[in-house]
Each structure stands twice: as structure tokens, then as C-alpha cells.
Image (tube, rainbow, N blue to C red; front, top):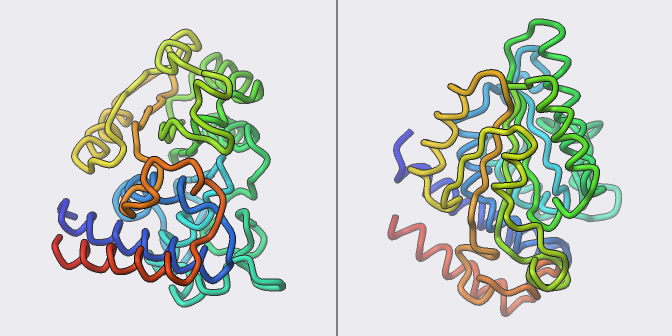
Length: 275
């Protein structure tokens, strides 16, 4: 798939984020938008998956460790054909299957329920170890928030992954530098992220996480790494694609009102036409 088509899909994913969080009047658009390009590349290029057979045994596994960015995850799954795009309008509605955090029991394409920060990477490490022990060929990918890596459990999982030489594991850090209460430096700085993961025995790749050429290069390189896990530190912009949401911490966890929805969708629609 060429870059232009990936950009078109990412734009549709971003529209899905706005549609869902507006309909829910809640949710987490900022981090969903920053990771939209990563979601797009994973589900349309990288992962060995089949929407018609979501549970096929040899599929690659994906764990959204920062589970609050479910709106972006759901939009990518819907666009990929796991369920109708129209269902995004029921995000977080009582009794509907697309709740505020991913639920593996009810959502096609979701491999692990997540939401408690720090825990998703541990589940991903367990999946990668299972493949290693069983001699299975599938790969495991997990997406974390940069604020999430303030959790100690993340580093326990990283230490274990390295000690078991899990080269079928790819950890992705959405490094948009903002979390619920402010910038990473204001809250509890995890920098330098690259040096920490190097110290824990990871192959470290740093990229612009909103640039598809760099995203492709990173995932291609990760496939060549042997004897240790890989981390891709993806520098992104919170709220990417919607001008008034970009790099604004206030959009970490709230849905757009009617006026904001119209403005955001107009920007994204225009951007989609210019791709």
C-alpha cells in the first residue's frame, strides 16, 4: 500500500475518533489522534490478521496498553472491516459493545482487554513468551503511552522480555509528551526514554510517529532484530490532524461539543480531499 493511501486511511481513522468521542460526549481524542498513523500502519500493513477470521491461531497479536485511546483503536478496526464504521457512533453508550476501554470478550479483533495503565505490556510479553515456548511464528505488538511508562510494572515486563530474548515482541511508545495532568516533565519525567530501554536490553528505534515512511522503516527493521525485543519510540503530536486539539493537554480526555465536532470534521474532510 502506498503512502498516499495510508494517509487517506489515517484521515478516516481520525474522523472515526471525532465521530465516536462526539457521540459519547466523552473519551480520549488527543492520544487517539496522535497514534492514528501507527494504528493505520499496524492494521493495514504490518499485522498478519483477517477480519473474516479474527481468532485465527497464527494471527499477530496486538495489545493496546494505553487502553483509554480505544477510540483510535476502534476506528482502525472498523475501517479494516472487523465491524461496521457506523458502530463508532455508539461509543461508550450503555449496553453497547464499544465501551471506553477495549474488551476482548465482545469486540472482534481485540486480543486483550486493557485500561489499567502498565498492565498491557505484561500481557504482550506473556503472549510473546507463549509463542516462543510453543514454536509459533506470530509476532506481538503493544502500544504504550509515554505517561504510562511512569508505571513500575512496565519496567518489570521490559526486564523479563529482555531476559527471555523475546525478539518477536515490538513495544511502541506514543511519545506525544502530554498526559492527563500536563507535560511529562511537569508530572514525572521518564526521559531519556531511549537510554532506559537500552539499559533494559532492547533494540531502540526512534522515529517521527506521524511520518509513514519512518514508521515503515522502523517496523521493517524490527523484523530483522534477533535475540532481543524492540522498542519503537514514536515522537508524535497529541491531537494530530485537528488544529485546535494539537499539542493541547485539555484534549487528553474529553469529547468535542457540536461546534467543535463540526470544525474538526471540516478540517479532516478538507485534509482528506487534499491527500
